[in-house]
Length: 148
Figure 1: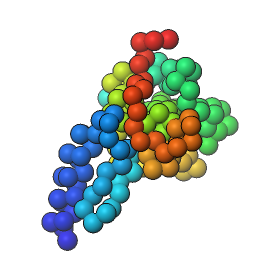
Figure 2: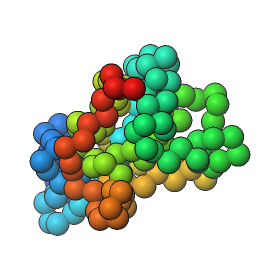
Figure 3: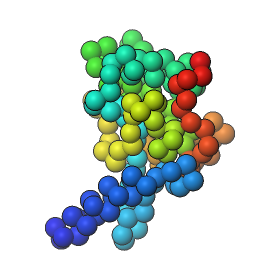
Figure 4: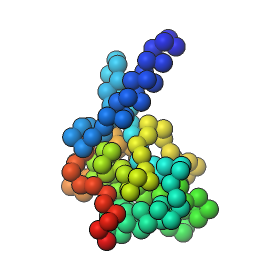
């Protein structure tokens, strides 16, 4: 069993790395197991870069940032990475969970680890809907922070 788990983890890390705009936001693992994905802020991202990315995602990017505003279930003014992760993930569930949409000037990355915490729930790639209401399966739009 542990050999299978090691293979699955290795396969998963390689498969996540290869996700592109033309692929599905989920990964099919052996035996039909599906892997959810989330877009989160990178640990090494500068706070100022994260703030710019949050401003873009919550502004012209069209993310629903109500939950990260004061009084919302994901509001945490002391942790910009949690705040950015929510905004990034919300943007990606609407626009496709791909490496291209989950970039935000290289401050974000895809993960298979659920970033939800306490009452703050992050929808995954399987739960996300794009603006038309269909399942997010990738797309051509890119979080381009240079156009404001």
